[in-house]
Length: 184
Image 1 (tube, rainbow, N blue to C red):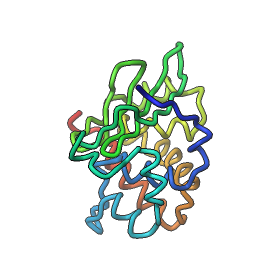
Image 2: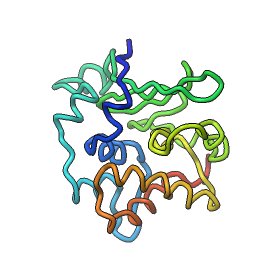
Image 3: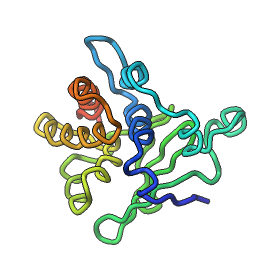
């Protein structure tokens, strides 16, 4: 059973946005430094472990008992076009994305990403604010023509995470590499 959380609980929370970037782009890599997005953020910013544990309901033994999944995950529910709903479940070992009751993908160890084209994503989410659109971006694949729009969304999240502007380009480039259509 999901525990629905309100967008207001996370929308302006620096810890949430840092966690979002660290956990949701598993293929993000800066080739110049050979660093993952997770490494880049963790080397430069502090994320409250207590806050993340509360969001994901992490506890000692969860990976031994349930492989990093909880029975009642904190879940963000968002209304989108045509009376559809997006659900984003936060587990200690995974973030799982749903449209209505259909799982679209996940960013955990057996990640399933790049499931929706940028055009479909833009149409589906067009009535939502940019920060809410960003929440579903790990499921999106882009082409070269979409890079600027994706980076604009990423910048909004980086501002909320209070990331220094000097890191914007580095982080955005790593996320672009994560989302670029290649073999999907």
